[in-house]
Length: 496
Image (cartoon, rainbow, N blue to C red; front, side, top):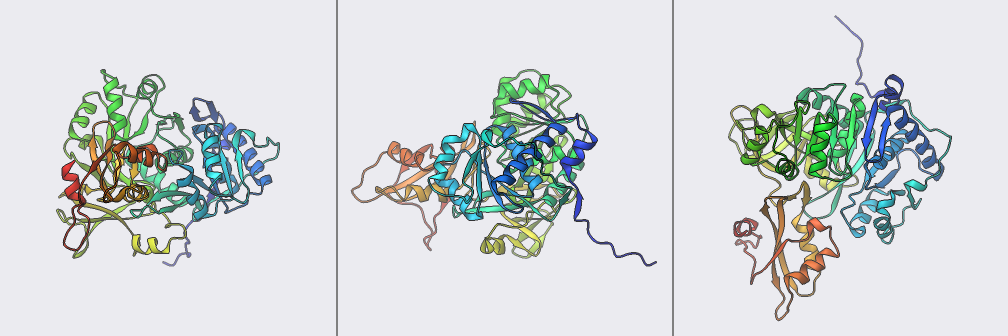
């Protein structure tokens, strides 16, 4: 039987417009700065979109957003979406010298910042000059004009989020509206969905995880609860008193939450989505004893958060596992013999599916290496068990995950090498009860040179975000290397 030629759907009704029309009084955002209904969020987004349009922002242009207040960020995110401009979230934990190259790399035309980020914005502007300059959000012109859109183009790039590579050079991950749509669908299938959901985000929104919660809540028409920073007492209080149903944290955050609380959590909390790094068995046991439904996950910016999720009922049966792939995602192991899903074969974890990003902005070299035949080569080493559960054995062997933040040794080593007393250095991660890992430096000094650990830490502190500064410095006569001269980081890890 012959039918019509069906084409893939590319355009769907705008998400915010739909929510403002169908559920105008539903609460969209709750934050320390107040609450916004979907109607109020739509009005604010369309008004700010008009203001940005008057500044000269046009469709497809990149706009950097630097905010420490979550609601400011959310409103700017929605305003730029109404303009079909591309959001470039900036990590306010970095320095101006670190952020300026990101803006220049993707050609940001404007820097938007809030009052709390004024000094950092000034630091950035010392290093780069976007075409439209910088504007403080609180001082943007309030206008009665409105700019809005009717459709979401699923193929269009929504945001560029920068993630450092192992060389230390930042890469701009291009996240499309399709990535968001399918991520929302997969998350709902994996974690369930209720119109009464309140998803708490106590982590910075410039991360892909924070952005994902904002967009998923928009697509679902549910409520996102924003905390401007993590405070375990505030999170526990919100779960107890405000009907929080989902919360996204990393193991270090969960550990602090459990340390502060002795009684079981309310049954209204149905999911704690745990990312960043694997949770130790003792933490899982403590969480489950307090009725915390922990769902561990594996993912990255390049997969728009989750690629696999471990359900809470498997938490102790599959300790160390990151779970099974989302319903729309394929996960395989790239071994010497080729791609396989056979159990107990170690190799590089590869991912395929509609949540995988469209590539890195203006980085054909990285794209060629990372995206092959439709698969994302993660650089992580893993193995599947007999039931198809993924175990991550080494998270990008050199990568340090500290409090949910990615820390790349090469970047710290580059800064250390700029100190006149340093001949060479190597940085590895050390296990830490509070942060998961912290960076530790091994340093070889120049002949006859002198420098203390405090000297080198101060040198790094002036050039790097605080969480990247080595927590300890060991002075050694030489670094361990193999016969070909390659640094043996594993030998250093064993020492710490």
